[in-house]
Amino acid sequence: MPARYEVIALEGLPEIRRGEELAPLIVEAARRQDTPIQDRDLLVVSQKIVSKTEGRVVRPGRRLRLGRGPDGRGRDRARPAAWSR
Image 1 (cartoon, rainbow, N blue to C red):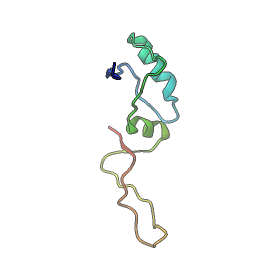
Image 2 (spheres, rainbow, N blue to C red):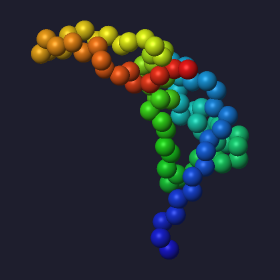
Image 3 (cartoon, rainbow, N blue to C red):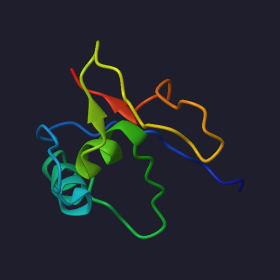
Image 4 (cartoon, helix red, strand yellow):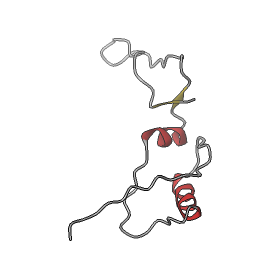
């Protein structure tokens, strides 16, 4: 039988803040919705939620200024890792 994958959205995660550990939050939310994490499960986590735990969030409308790069050119057009709403 070929491999089969089922997509199950995870609900019930709290608002994620800088410094929070994602793994326990994900495991607990999965358990609460009666879809506990099992061996061989494949988890997909968005970059935005990871960026929020790392504190790499910029409010919309604010420019991220990175100063000058090694080539002397400005780098203030860089995109932040995640936008916060």
